[in-house]
Amino acid sequence: MSSGVKQSATPLSSGQPPALTFGEFLNALFQAFDAGGVRFCVLRNYDGFPDINNGHDVDFLIRSADLPRAIAALRSLQGIRIVGVTAHFGGPSLFLEGISTAPGLRALQVDFITSLSWKGMSYLPTKTILDAAIPRNAGNLTFLAPSPVHEAIISLLSSLLVGGWIKEKYFPGVQRTFLNDRAGVISALKPNFGLKAAVRLVDAVASGDREEILPCAGLLRASLLQRALLREPLRSSWFVACHYARELAIRYSPRSLESVSILGLDESRAVTIVESLLPMLESAAKVVEKRPLCSLPPFAGDSAPASDEAFVSMAIVVYRLVEEWRSQYAKKNSLTLHLRVCSSRELLIGLPGKCRSGIRWIPRLVARLFPSSDLWIMLDPADERLPSGNTKLPCVKTDWQREACLAFVKTRKNFVILDANRSVAELTKDAYAAIIKALVCRTDRQLRKRFQ
Image 1: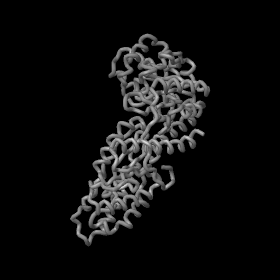
Image 2: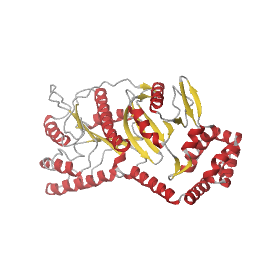
Image 3: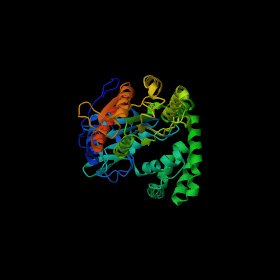
Image 4: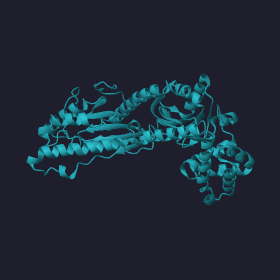
C-alpha cells in the first residue's frame, strides 16, 4: 500500500516489532533531547516515572525555537513511529506507535507545549518556568520539572482558566502549595493577572472554598485580557486571532480526521474486526471511535416499484453524498480516527433488483463524488491465490458483488485487499499494520510541511 498508487498489498505481515516499555521510551527520548540540545521540563504526572505513566499523555514544556529539534529527537528513536499530529496554539500533540504503557496498548500521546496560554495570551511565560525548573530523579532518569509554585499554578489554571472547572486530581497539591508559599504564588500571578485577582484566587484556594474559586475564572480572564491588550494591543490581537483560526481548523476541517473503511461481504465479520481494532488503536489519535453503519433513507426500501429504480438509486446517491460530506466537517475536539464498516449495500454496490442493473455506473458516480476514506481495507472472500471453497455466501451473489466491490476499491488511492478466508485474529493484525502504515505516511507528509 502506498499513497497515490492504486496497488493492493496482500497480505501484510502479521508480525509487529516489540513495543518499548514506558521506561525504555523515556530513557531513549531524554538522551535524544540532550543530544539535540533541547531544554525541557515534564509538567505533571511524573511521580510514577520511569515505569508508570499516571496521566493519559506526557506533557513537555519546551521553547518554541526547540520544537523542530524536539520532533527530530522523537523521529530518531528506533521502533517509534509518529502516527498522528495536531497543532494547537500552545504547541503540537503527537501520537506515537510502538510504546507499551499498559498491557495491550502500543500508542502514547506526547504534547510539546511551547506556550501556557488562554485564547492565545500567555498566563505564565515559558522562559520563566524553564529558568526556575528543578531537577528530579526517578530510577535511572534525571529530568527537570517546574518549581512547586509554577506546577501548582499550571495544575490549577489549565482547567480553571481554560475550562472553568477544577481538576480534583491535582487540587490537594495545589492547595498545599498555595498555603505554604502564599507570597510566592501571588508574586508569580501578579504580572499577568494583577494583585487583586491574584490575592482573591490564592485565598479562595487556600480556604478550599470551591464556590469562591470558580467565579475567579471570569475575573482572571478579564484581567489577563485587559493587561495583554493594554501592553501590546496589536500583538495580543494577532495571537487571539491565531488561536481561534487554529481551533476552527481543528474542529471543522477534514485535515483533523483520519478515516478507515473496512469493506466486506460478510458484515458481521468486518464488525468483529473493527471491535478488535478499537482497543489496539487507543492513543493512536486523540479520539478513536467506530462510526455506525449508515442507514439508507426510508425511500430506499426493497419494495420500491421497478419503474422508480433509477430515481430511487439517484436519490440514495444524493442522500449518502450529503451525509458523507457532512461527516467530514463535523465538530471535532482534536485529531479523530474513524473506523467504519462499509457494506456493499451502503455503497450501492451490487444491490439486488433495482441497483444490479446499474452496477456499472453507480460505483463510478460514488467514486467521483464521495469523499474518500484515507484507507480502504477489503476483505476478499475469494482470493485468487488460494483455493476457493468459501460457501458462507451464495456463489452467484458473491461473484458479482465481489467483482463490483473490487472494482470500487481499486479506484481508491490507498487500499489493501486481505484474504477473508483467514481467521479474524490474522485479519485484525494485518488490518492494524495497514492502518498504522497509512497513518505514518500521512503524518510524515504533515511533519515535513510544518516543521522542516
